[in-house]
Every structure is written in structure tokens, then in C-alpha cells.
Length: 78
Image (tube, rainbow, N blue to C red; front, side, top):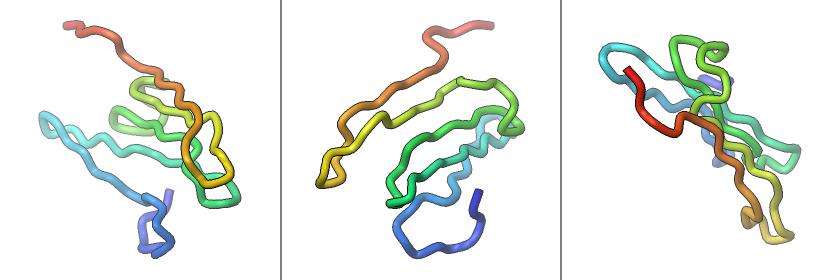
């Protein structure tokens, strides 16, 4: 994960917090700097695997997203 400025338009860091917990997401890019995946929930990247994860399945020639898969919690639990 990048923590500095890349200046290429790619998301490098997003910090979300809830109830004093920090949820750092991770981003994956292909060779053309197109987003291919976004994941991360919990205190580390290995916590809550596939919770609130998105995967982009393809792009057209103009760079528009053709498909998106979302994985994650479907309801609430206590």
C-alpha cells in the first residue's frame, strides 16, 4: 500500500474509523493503473477476509468498468 503521494490519480490511502477502530483499506491496480480490487476491514488487512471487498472484473477500451463483484456482510449481527 502506498502512503505517499503518487500524483497519478490512483487512490493510495483512505482512513475510516468507527468506535475508535481504524479500518485501512487496500487497493490493487493493473498495469494500466486501473483499479482491480479494493479490500480491508478490521485492525489489519488479514482481519475479516472478504468483508466489504470489491473486485472489478473488466474494463472496456475507454476505461469504463464492465463488471463489478462485491463480497461482504449481508446483514447485521451482534
